[in-house]
Image (cartoon, rainbow, N blue to C red):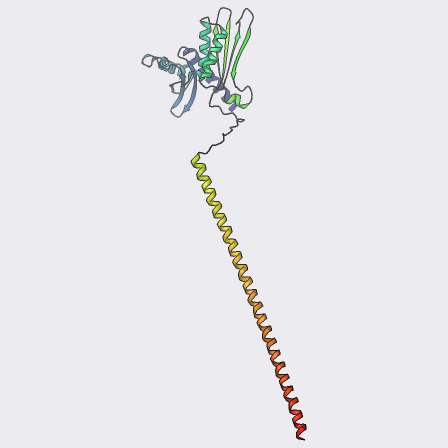
Length: 284
């Protein structure tokens, strides 16, 4: 079944990780990655000191390759060693450092606080160091040291938070060191960036004000032109109305003059008739 294949592959990777952890503890082992390629199986080993992983003349790498091929049934294994860029942000390396300092007899509080300062100084968003076991006396106890911001649950806690574990054998018993680190490049889904207000320089502000003045002037010119056009149109309409009124007035004056002339002619005719009438009577 497919589920069984996944479980088998996960178990194999866990065994390889434990083998490399025990074999490369002094080299600052920081984890591994297995990549299956058509040419074989590529095993990438991350370490703080790659020279100790390679060994003199490549002796250690050849021994690890042979062990991976014989004991873990890897097809044509090829081991590649990479140096850890920032060891302080690797939880496995820091857990081994805490274990070595506790083994040298240092107090657990001093060790924890110094490690936290180193991790936070490297740029981590948050760190949590847990030391459990017989740290104070004959009874077991748990000491937890936290600084910064670190996710405890949900999908971001499994996606962004890196974890490392180490053990150390002391006279009272075995101590367990658990380190969780929130790397600086982790971007949480609820993060909100507030942009600061932009301050314009004096030249830019002068240019903007001059542009605004030019725009205002252009707008005023356009408005004045529209008003002038409207006034011209009104003047033309008024002129046309005045001309029509003048024509009407001239026509009415002509009619009145014609009427007056006709009345004068009629009066003159009547006076002539009246003058002719007495003359005719006198002749008779």
